[in-house]
Length: 323
Image 1 (cartoon, rainbow, N blue to C red):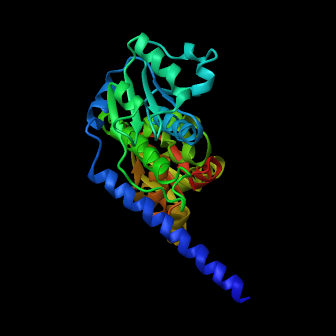
Image 2 (cartoon, rainbow, N blue to C red; image 1 turned 180 degrees about the vertical axis):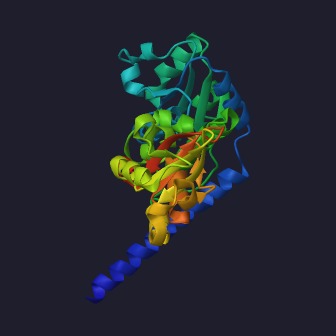
C-alpha cells in the first residue's frame, strides 16, 4: 500500500513538472515571437494556392494538426508526408503554394526532396525549427525559430516541449490569419457543418419554421379563432399581426392570465405587446440563450420591418443539438 501511495505521489509530481516545463517554454515563445512571424502571415495572405505543411515523425503529426487547423479556419492547406512526397506526392505541391517545413533539428533527411522541389520551382519556403544554423533554416525564405527550451522528457530525447511549441506556433498563425481575414462564425460553420460545433454555429433561419407553419392571427381576431390557430400549428403561441408587423404574442401563460373573460376578448387584448423577437441571421445558440434568459419556449423571427417570417421552438434547438 505504501509503495502504491509513493508511486501516486511520483506520478502526480511528474505530471505537474512536465506541464510547468512546457508552460514556461510557451511563455518564452510568446515573449520572443519569431521575427518573421508577421512576414509569414502576410506571405500566406498573399498566397494564391494552399499552405503545404510537411514533416516526419512527431513533427509530421504536428504538421497534420497545423494544416487541419488552417484549413478549418479559412486558410486552404494540405499536409504532404515528407517520405510520400519523394515517391509521387510532390505533384501535390504547385508554384502557387507556400511550404511550411517542420523539423526540430532542421536536419531531417526526409525533408530534403521537398526542400529541393520548393527551391527548384521558387515556391516560398517557411521553416519551423529550434536551430537557427540548421540546413533547413539556412535554406528557408522565412524562419520561425523556436526558443531554446528543454524537452520535458527526463532524458531530453523524446519530442515533448519542442512539439508543443511548434503546435502552439501553428495555432498562433491560424488565429492571426483569422483575425486579419475577419473570419466570422458564419464562415466557421462552412467548414464545420457536422456535430455539436456545427449545431452551435447554425443560424436561426436554418432552423426556424416559416410561411404556412406560422401561427398568426390579426389584432382584432376573436379568441376562438386564435385558439384554433394555436392548436393547429402546435407551437403553444400565436403571433398577433397589425399593419403587417408583429404587434404581440399570445402564449399559454397569456391564456391563463385572462381565463375569467377570455372568450369575450379579442387577440389584441390578450396578447403580450412588444414581444421578444430575433433576427433570422443570428446564431441559434444566441436565440437559445435569449429563451433561457426570458424563460420562454418559442420565439418569433422578424425581418427588418418587424414582419413575422418564422418561429423557432426549443424543440427545434434540441433536435439540432444546439440545446
